Length: 186
Image (cartoon, rainbow, N blue to C red; front, side, top):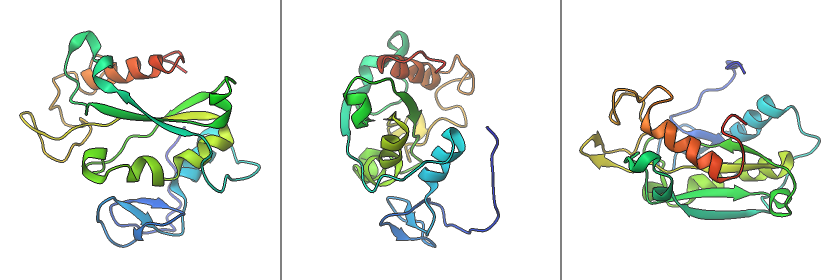
């Protein structure tokens, strides 16, 4: 997949959503901007092709799970206690489903914004269309190591291997995808 920027939109520091959200020009919690653009829909279209139709609203189930149970070799991955997974109707019915991982932004974890990102970012209604589960892993804020905004590790707070397959958060993610019943390379 290749990054695509059509250069036609200016957003504040937020995820553009088609449904309700804050003013597109403001960067305020929960960082979901009503911008007249459906970022989740565009992400799914780039990954899976254009849909025949769009789901008006999500019809599946949003569930929580214990993220600590997925620690790689017991190592602290700096994850919150609870994570979320959305299962569309097809997955709930036992049909084959894929998986998409939706990473929240800094200050966009559930401890900071509640369930706003996992419910309102738009991924769930598209998951119904494409028959994919959506994994919403949740980081946690910390002061030792310094990560007060609950960002994913993009600078090395979790260790020297943070940006490789040996990094603790990436190993945690492999465990989480495996727990969904899909192969890690799916």
